Image (cartoon, rainbow, N blue to C red; front, side):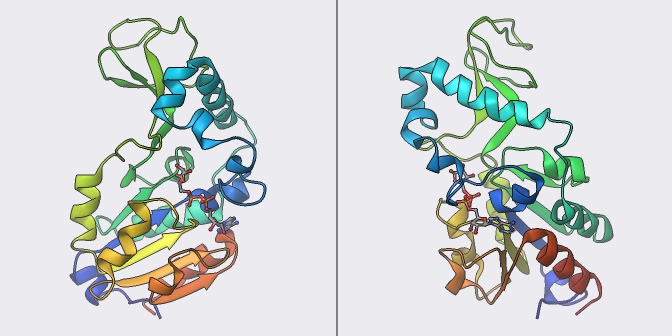
Length: 244
Ligand code: APR
């Protein structure tokens, strides 16, 4: 059973929630490693490494332009799982940190505020000239100019590619170091460092996995609840808030 309010979860430093592509699946965004996932259609080496970008920037920009365009789809909306996490944050202000591997903005749209994107954000463009990451909803074109410094042709997607350092790791490590409850939602547990978070906290924090099926790290969790995120996440949040 999850550790309830007023016990070590709250007293010992709160909750860290890690999310992956599975939480956005029922909003219509593809995951990566499912049979209908992104990596079943395109190779990581072609579109998600610095070497790919150096070799064929147009191919890489086109891949991310297509994914960024999905964020502009009026039909795209946060689902019950995103909304439940935003509710948890509202009910327990200051005690919930949401760490997402996702580059979509569905957690923000659901109302989550205490949120870190460790793999970056599709809705931003990063300038190779000045380093600024600026909000960006359109395609990144060869003549696109940096909103911060004006340099043209120097913008890349503000996402973390394989072989690059994840973002916000100092703040994530600090929160993991003191949390009393670690919850992993909708991730296969196949990409580090996120896949290693549970090993770092188990024994000290209670660990719970909410996923459609057992992840690669499932055996490391105190508890595993398997099912679609839109069902298991709201039910889990209800239990936490009810103090059970
Ligand atoms: N509800 C809950 N979980 C689901 C659902 C759903 N409706 N649909 C799929 N899942 C689960 C799958 O069972 C799988 O375990 O979500 C997980 C998705 O795993 P991946 O596709 O590997 O996505 P993720 O774990 O987020 O990938 C991590 O890899 O390619 C990189 O940068 C990319 O951030 C990504 C990282």
